[in-house]
Image (cartoon, rainbow, N blue to C red; front, side):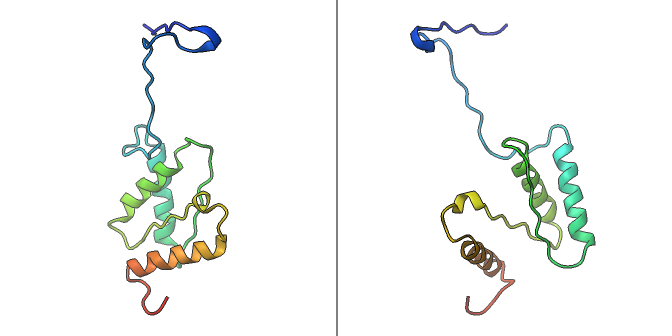
Length: 119
């Protein structure tokens, strides 16, 4: 049965009788329907069967599951010879994008010891 919350003046909830529950904005650890896992598997298959490095972008609305697909792809690639690196362009809004991108990539490659020497 749905909970009915008393509404006070100006549309506010009257009293403290109506609890608010927030949903975390984090990738799902489990793909309940399998659709995200199928996408992650398809991307992993492309990575494994095509020669050379890859640059893959996921596009979708907020909450569509992009981060979940990336998380599942990372898990899948742990046992493979591939590395998933993420660059969040929104986090660097206002920064010189090309420089920030390259600095972040160099740092990731150096950490994995795929790149050595002066950076």
